[in-house]
Length: 316
Image (cartoon, rainbow, N blue to C red; front, side, top):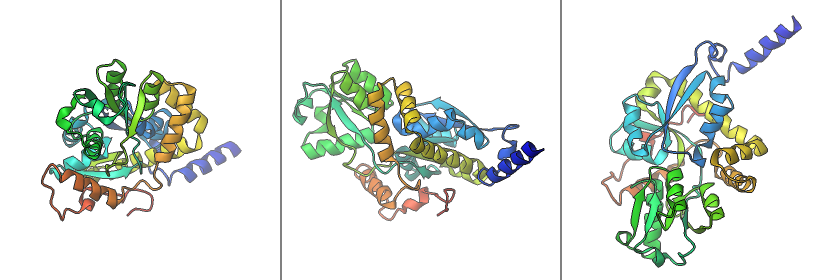
């Protein structure tokens, strides 16, 4: 009797955090999330899945690999419920798709141009190829900003569109390209294979990174499901912060890197997380200014039209 009473108290204390969790074991709601490739910035998703945080929130997740460019239409078409690329989501939203940023994980982006050791100055890249995820992706925007800074004409450098960071690393490792735009742990992994970190380019422009993009219809019709997904992902961020050794082991296993590399990657990841899950309006406006360089974006466009943080702790 004492055990049963204690169990009831525990369940009642947890229930306000995750509405409907008491019946989660009986009927988990399925969410489908699209990812282009394995990437460090998606670690909260991996942790939420592998540590049972999604199930604790009454959810069962299917992670589906798909090219970043088709994810917005996949969400609108109901093929997936969410995708993580904020820059892709915002671009699609200003193009007319009813998509909304509901969560942002990071305040910085450690994109790095990694090259072969024969590249000693920016001009050495002229006539050579660089691997990037795709045109108008974050790696592409950062690289264009760097080209402008070092006065290189982008037409003088070739590109290989890989579809994701892991594939960009593979292109570099197989020496198909002279350089690749990578994030940890792929940059450290490349260094271990004889390449070098040529220059940090992730601080040159304001580009939102990873979080959660949802369709407006998903929020209107399944708000509780969206809110529980957000809660599970925020729990994953908290778990990563609180479990250094196990997080580093997960990073090492998932990305096939050494313990020393995973420790450095863990430190980078922790330094990237923001405090409240929100996207600063300054960053959103900076990204709109960047997009205006290549497409018509109304000068008076309010970023809050494609941002909804009402489901985060504390609401708006």
